[in-house]
Length: 110
Length: 119
Image (tube, rainbow over all chains, first blue to last red; front, side):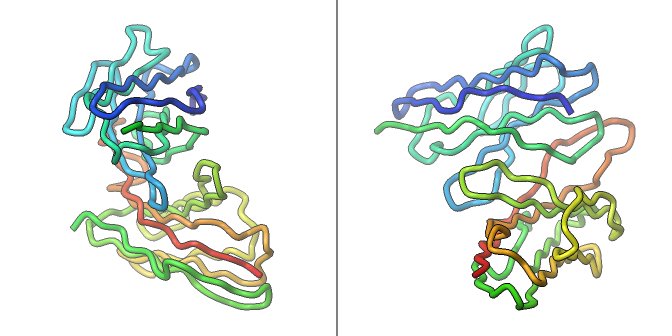
């Protein structure tokens, strides 16, 4: 699986948009990009995933660079409940097996 | 029902004890996973079961023994553990381990974990 690089931590004000970056320069053409988050004292939770096109769901948006070497998870209005560690994961086509990197710890300031 | 249920939530055991962690899902998923997570670290894959057969063992010591009695249940048997094995043990499930045709719906469902302390 391709390696990912994320900032260790980020801060956001409540009710403002948050852009969480992820670099995955060694991604191959059939690899998927996944985002999970882990709230304190809970198991990881699926956020969104994509292959080439930008994706939207009720939780977030995923913007994928044209060369696919980077992506950005967008939370449109951060709430206190969004404070978590966000993991960007790249996995091979068809594989549900995920290898977690260090992730970005997001703090949301009231 | 989109839940993965893990029991017990907390477990304290001595180094000579034998105990088990249990994981259950009723989503019809045919792949189940054990992850280990140390404090302030990302989850690390331990085992993958696919269609009730052990598919991947990430070089886990034999003092951890997984078992998949049926498609809904996954156990992790613990024996002669060391204090450094203290961690959060996470169970997860997915529709399959490897999706056919390269398609990937992307979602692993995780339980809340069993927090293990080895004295």
